Structures are given as C-alpha cells and as structure tokens.
Length: 257
Image (tube, rainbow, N blue to C red; front, side):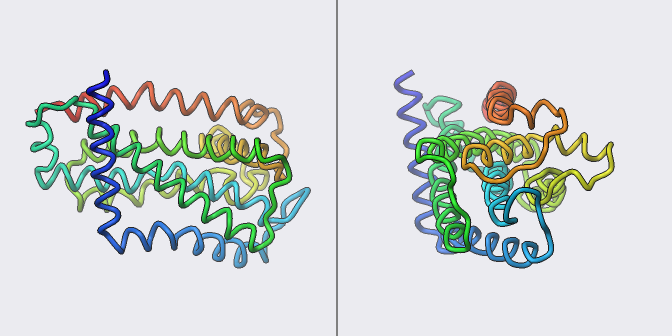
C-alpha cells in the first residue's frame, strides 16, 4: 500500500513537471478561467435573467462545475501517452499498476485547484459574491476538486480505449453537449419537458446546484427533481459512483498488455 502511494506521488510529480515545462498548457490553465468569466458573464449576462438574483452570481458556480467535469485534458493526454508507447514503458516498470493513473488524476486535481481559485478571483472582480461563510466556500471548492478527480478517471479510461491522440481530439466534440445540457449556464425551466428531465438528472446540473447552494448564490426551483432538491448529496453520490465504476475499469485497461 505504501509502495503504491509512493509510486503514485512520483507519477503525480511527473505530470506536474510536464506542466511546468509546457508554457502553452500553463497559459491555457491560467487564461481559460478569465476568458470563461468575461465571455459568459458579459456577453450572455446582458441577455439572460434568472429568478432571484444576478446572472453572474448564477453563472460562476456553473463555470466551476463545467471545469470540474472537463474530461478532455485527461482523455487526450492518456490517448497521447498510449499512442506514443509511454504507457507500454510504464507497464514494464516495477511499479503499482494504478500508480500512473492515480498520479495523473492527483496532478490534474492539484493544478485544477489553481484554475478554481483564479476563476473565483475573476468572478469577484465582475461582481460575484460568496454569500455564505468561508467554511461553506471551502466545502464548495473541495466538492469541485473531488468531482474533478473522479472525472479525470473517466477521461483516462476513454483515452486508453481510444488509444490515439488525433481520434481523442475529434471525439472531444461529443463531450461538449454534456455540459451544455444542464443548468450550468441557463435555467432548465425554458426547456421542453423531456429535455428538462434529462438536464435535471445530468450530474453537471447536480454539481452546479450544489455549488450555488454552498456559495449562497441564486438558484432555480427544483420542481420536485430529487438531484436538485438535494444537490450536495446527489453530487457526492455521482462522485462515488464514478470512482467505483471507472477506477477499476481504468486500472484494468491500463494494466492490459
């Protein structure tokens, strides 16, 4: 157990070292929150109204949720390593089979926290406020980081299944509707009934609603939908479910010769 944790820490350090020597990735990590807040906050914010508060206060938790569930970096990164033979070289080393996937998930969560903090600062600059205490705010960031950790395992598994960076980049367009079909950017009340049911049960909607609850930001009526009536509990449930399903799948796929 201790050896597996040590191997995982070394793999996480490798991922962070790669990021440190990749100026483009650093610029994307630091610049994306600013672009998202300005783009959605000012362009959409001038045209969308939400019940009970300002649109930017409604939007910021949705952006946190969208960033937390983004599986594209881990999917494309693992597909790249698989296609270039890096995964095969790691398999030949005397390390735990889960060490490299765990290290990548941990590293993604660590530098993802930097994106969350920067996004929060940008949000504060454009008028977003945390209306509950610091403890709830820390809980919200912990929930976002935990969900990002779980989502990274999903991305790594898909990257291993796809196996090629070019294919993974092309498939990434199919991930975009998952975040759009939620309450992250707009209330679901204006959607058709059948589409709203899908959006309300989308894990992204639960995470966004949970973050709004923890930050004390305006939300929308849940209309009896269980995940939105109990968003924090639903988000934790989705997080655990993703880990239970995809950690074993990813570990088994990674260890397969």
